[in-house]
Amino acid sequence: MTITGGCYCGALRYEATGDFLAKGMCFCRECRHISGGGANVILGMPAAGFAYTAGQPSAFTRDDFEGSVTREFCGTCGTHVLTKSPRMAGAVLIKVGSLDDQDVYDMPNMAVYCCEKKPYHIVPDGVASFDKFPTRSSSVK
Image 1: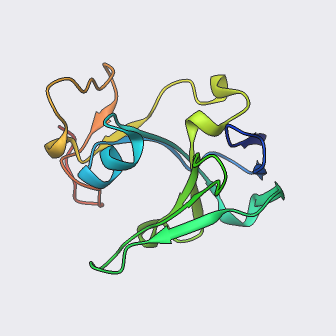
Image 2: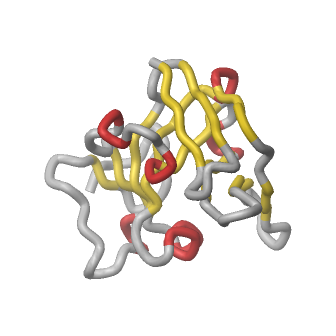
Image 3: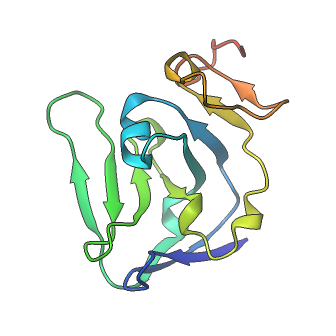
């Protein structure tokens, strides 16, 4: 599959090809901070199939704790476009709000860091939910 997207002002554009690796929602404090309070809704795609087609992103990585992710965003309008996580080497986590066709996302297949979600956060029925980031031994909530 090939998907396209970009930022709110149009200065930053991308294309991603490959199979979806994950469709998720994250409720951790860092993601809620970045999203403005809601879940961070992402589409995982192979990093090898991702390329910026217009503009270059600004990037930010916290250096005050281990395992920090790198967030890429438009330096003009601030739209958060993707995350690169050391937990998912070889993948990019594209922000669903930046997709040209958000219907390709349909529904998440997992929700993570549900231990940090607030009462006003909703996980759709039937979506696998995990207290933290799932591992092979994680159990679904």
